[in-house]
Length: 552
Image (cartoon, rainbow, N blue to C red; front, side):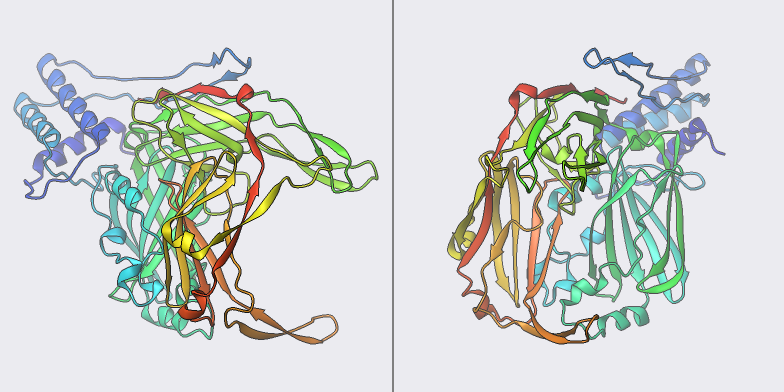
């Protein structure tokens, strides 16, 4: 097994042998610092003939608030560097050139070990926008401008291909920091793709590729499932290949000098087979620039609610903060919510959830910047993407959000109406007194309505924020269904498919309503839309401020 210092030696050697480039690319500051530090270590080693070692560990310490002992284990590294003065000076000049903006691309230095240095990602570079294509399947369904910038500054090119049963999958790029993992794939297999395209399906063409694989839902990192599948996007490229991007939220710090990622699936484009990728990443580059918050438990007052019969019950809503971190690519927050089974006064089974979901927190940094949580579904629980704080932020404030209820325990709010003209102009959708969304890029085109929802304040997580009121205004698809119990038949109407995806960097939700039979002219007659306004409030008395700590 190649140790860390041997890898650093090969990294510097590879840098020293790279030819100059006419097209400089930005290299992340954390990588610049690492290369310069290694170069300086080389100089010291050559001049003083000393052994350079480094070992860092965090010890257990009390957070001073809850009495809970918390341990954060940092990576440790030991090794020896030796070189000559001449070679050291050459390498140090290369490090200086990097800081001046010279282009450097390094991938797979040494057997299977790769580091996050940055470079172009084909998924983004080759992708047209939706406005440039005749069919949505030919372009990603949203514009990931901020995501592209961060991922192209922090990824590694892999280029490994696995072929089985007529389908070839190439792992083009991988990006990982302490908050997320992103993989980019090119999938070829004309026969399999043609079969999917020829399906007798009235749904939108792009949706046929959803879930047909490869999914890689259970990716492992160092043998553990700390990568929570989140969002994806795809499109058919001009050459007939399928370009696929998958984003995962990490639920713990990837530890170790070498981090092994395993992606494995037995289905691709609806065909059975075996597709497996094993990639070993440089742990130091994965953790570079990371900031974390110590996990802790924060007691909160119980809340009293009413069930559907108007009977009172109490809920424990303590904040169990298990993971909060930021890296060069993104942010993540996870809290622990427990499902408990109990019975009500009449002996009926009741399922309650105790603990505070991360989605019920209004989050700011000490500069006042609002941070937004998001993920691809509105299902509560699990880790959430968290937008980045200000670069100078030193702490994060978590303010609980409490839903208000009517005296009888019912919903406290109202259904509101907004017009089509307001949506086209960029209306603000106030979903509560403390936040909501702003509508942008509202477009009616080719039997579909698409728009972006930009969060402000505390927006919560909803899969459908605004609802078109189309009854009697559009052509709908008729479908005959059969009752499995009595064999009777009935005709139902289907309007279309609602879908959405979320940009993990910004929290912006991109929504599409693909209508099965309605024309654009009919869609323009949907002049009335509805949305829900719900009473929430900020529990500022129980807000918690936590400190950001560097992993470097």
